[in-house]
Length: 147
Image (cartoon, rainbow, N blue to C red; front, side):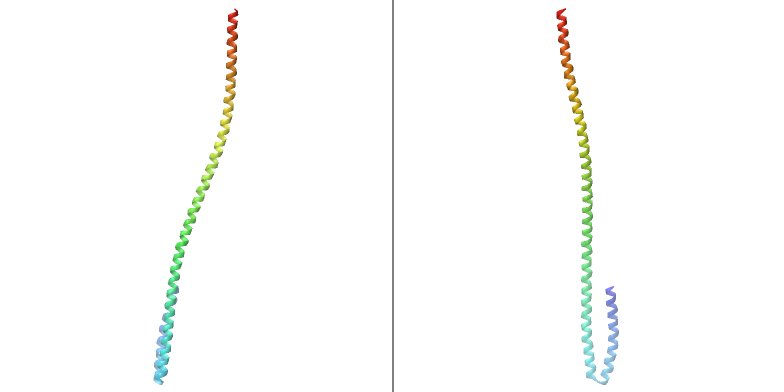
């Protein structure tokens, strides 16, 4: 858009130049010195204007380059943020999975503790039964010996 404005401005300056050249011609017809002075002033003014237009074009190009660079940097930041968000979500999911596994492990630990107590209880009963068996065998043997 800035480019279009500059082109419109330059077109207007060409029209003014044509008009002023006619004015210089008419003024020179009456007084050559005034015509030359008017022509010189207009030429210097146009040189200043052309310099300003060049500076505006350069500034516009720099601004455009800066904007492009900023757009690229912004896109890189957005991509980095997305990657970090994905990483954070993955870490959150891993944490949830670990918490679930930990809870399952604790539950299994309780089951194992209960099973260990049951096995110990059965072992005690087995030991008691073995002792009673030995006692009964000894009594039976003692009874056979007395008979």
